[in-house]
Image (cartoon, rainbow, N blue to C red; front, side, top):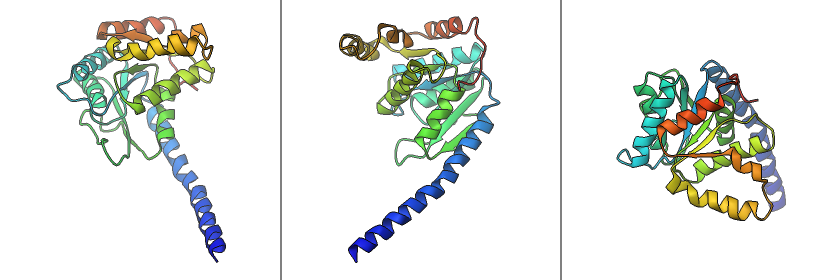
Length: 228
C-alpha cells in the first residue's frame, strides 16, 4: 500500500513539473518583450542588506548616476540595499531604471526608484539571471553575499566558455574584493584550474570615474546588442 501511495505521489510531482514549464515560458516571454526595447544597460549587483548610510550604498548611487549620465540604462534586482542605490542613481540622472524583482520570503521588496513600466517580477532565479546576462552590456559588482557571487561567477563562466561575448565586469571596492582575487590568482591559477588570461575577465575599481572609464573604453569601437 505504501509503495502504491509513493508511486502516486511521485506521478503527481512529475505532472506538476510539466505544467510549471508554461509558467517558466511565460516569464521568459514577458522578460524578452519588455527588456528588448530598453537599449544599452549596465547591471548593478550587491547586497540587499546594505544600509543607506553605508559608504558602498552612497558609492553605488554615484556610480549608477554617472553611468546613466554617460547614456546607459541601469538594471538591478529591484530590491533594497545596493539594488535600491543603483536604481536611485539612474533616477537622479533621469536615466532608464529597470528592476528585475524576485519573490523571496525575506529581504526582497520593491525599491521606489524603478521606472513604473520597467519593473518585472520573477519566481525563478534562473529566468531572472538569463535576463541580466542577455540585456546587460556590463556588470558592476558591489560588495554582496552569495547571490552577488552567484551572478558574478555565472557571467564569468559564460564568457570563459564562449557562450556569450565578453563584456565588462567591474568589481567595485578593493578592500572587499582583494582577498577573493588573491585566492583566485594564488590558488585557482597556481593549481591550473583556470588560465592566466581568465584573470582579465574582471577589472577592479574604486570610484565612479574609473567604472565609467572602463565601460566606455570597452565600447569605444563596439556595437551594442543582446548577448545571445
